Image: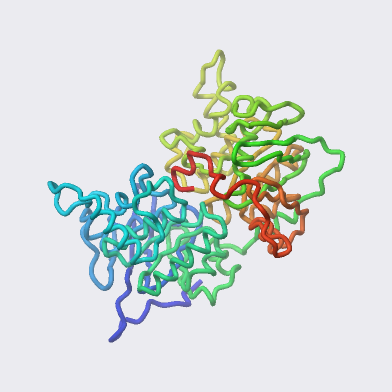
Length: 537
């Protein structure tokens, strides 16, 4: 597909692009990470960069931020050649990246994070804390970030941390910010506030390169989109002139087959099917009270809700990660002792956790080791683990989940995000669980991997077991037979297949017949699991 947008003109009175990369190629051994790639971002523009996992986006970002030196090609910022690799201050004054995994240090204050390693004018000069806080107030005020500079960063919300990271980048002089999956941990209101702030900064001349797997956000925020596939530039076009199907086709190289088509293949659940998951009057401190839910064999149920709804914690409690104050969870008629992961595993629960980096993977271990962590007792006699059995078991999982990897011994950190998520799913399925609990299972994966993973979850139910998808992503929920909605600790609605987007979103946002629903707990009392919160959930 040919470009329908060309580089901005640079005639008299027109500023040079804030960033311009041409002919960029990069190899890592035998792997071609980028092949004659290019991108041009204008001043004050919100430019989307999309593509499947492994398309070359991360390598391009590493080149644009000076972390990698390209084998070929040129890179310019505002018409000037890029700084030498290693000149950190020069790079910071031109470009910054706000990553999906926050780089804010939770135990430091906002002011300390904003001016880390530059708290004072000279290395031997004592830090003047009042002056530091005043500088932070001025910086935050300049960009309209309503955050107390004296508060510890771990007390901030996810979006507040992102605003602090953006303000820190701007304080170095950069007017080109790369946003890597910035909405992955935000609910709908948080996304709206983030986009509003980004539009304000655009009016001040700041340009953004927006990387996201959520294609609707590209249409909501960006004016231009660039698509990469198989390490190469495919097209650059005005967002308004590129339809959804054409965008997906450019990303995948084939006709778009939507997740909705997968949803259409679902089958009706038999009324006499066994109840495989039962939650009776579950109360989790500061999360939910007297919550009940059931899932039958052959059924995929969605548990929807925004960040503060408590749905994630309920899903984690089924897998033994939280201790209940009262209530009962049973799987296949067997009671699960809350707060006990071994009890949940023994009862037949498989878990796909919310954050594969923090909760799902051991990065310095191989694909085989990660995929078999839940079944090590089956890989050798008397508590031993036989490498041959591990490789054989992992090989079956790699084939079953279509994991793209050079081999079972490959470090899982070397895989693309979509294939890493398949490893996490493989481990959850390794025990052949009665109930699969998948928490935001397609977070940060490309379109084709999303479709594959949701189809695999559907197969679990079609095979006579049960699945619970915990998510606020509409595409995730479209494969479900029914969707139960939580709002601030209580169930507020239930939808059968065929629900309308606007009705489900209204329930998730706590609106019924245009009347806000009262929360069961104060909004500030409901938090994410401590591990995820510390790292920017």
